[in-house]
Image 1 (tube, rainbow, N blue to C red):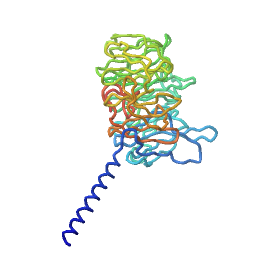
Image 2: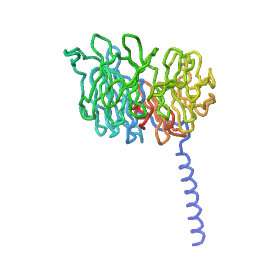
Image 3: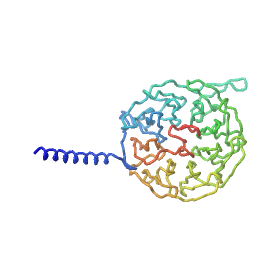
Image 4: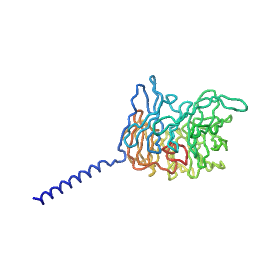
Length: 410
């Protein structure tokens, strides 16, 4: 009898163990599986998640901004989401207006920076409180007199030392300037510029790279990050604010310089390495760790260029728009606006996996633990991936998950 009881106990134990193992197997997510969904907090007023890149904090927290509306609008706030389950961690107080003028950028110490109208906010990652708020000055001295400088802020980038580089870009009659704001909220320097509403980029040696203009026309400019002084400029013809600047691993600048010219320039002596024809109706550019640059055209598909030679490798490909690139050199994004679900392809356009969730194509972030985050107008989604963001090349339009636009940051 005792032997029968022992045998029965062992049998029940083994069955339980088998069932337990199967349950564990079922918990393992496959690429494309939805891990959680976060719903934007309910409000009496209408608000939507911005179609801008999500930011991933130094502690893994996901940040997005939301506001807007039409007749019953809500002022903008920043929201923090726990990456483990999608629960709301906090929401900030309202910003200056019902939209943001910049991406959310995460500083080296985890502080959150975002611009709204004429104000730059530094937000505490612990609770969403404002560490400080800097506002564009009303006037600044120029040629022994004060000139009016109060206007809307635009894109921002993070300098090598953690300073914030930002510029005024709005409409109206005022002098535009680029500002360097320390992480304590004080102005370190400023330089008057002819401003374009394009992203600022920080290069290999800390130089500030931007599109600006003067009386002669538009320019690609390189400035000193220590004092803001202009180092050099070259004529350019900026088609749109989407014309992001990318930086090669050796520090060379690769961007569209005119409506039909893709160029690679040495930032030190500003000599042209190569310049090739590259007509496009959309100017976002990324490149992988195999030196393939992906330049998307809304009407003619994606073209692939070799960044070493500038040679066209392929064109007319059905690749994701504004892609992220992972460590396997897979591209993540939306292929068609008619069916804006997440697709992951190789560089030839072959689909590796897909999710059936429709997303805003510009909101994606790909974490170090192989999770891709994206949104629609009301929800944030966490989707299992099979790789993380590539840290070689220029794997995202804002370079990294902190949206620093700095080639040296991750």
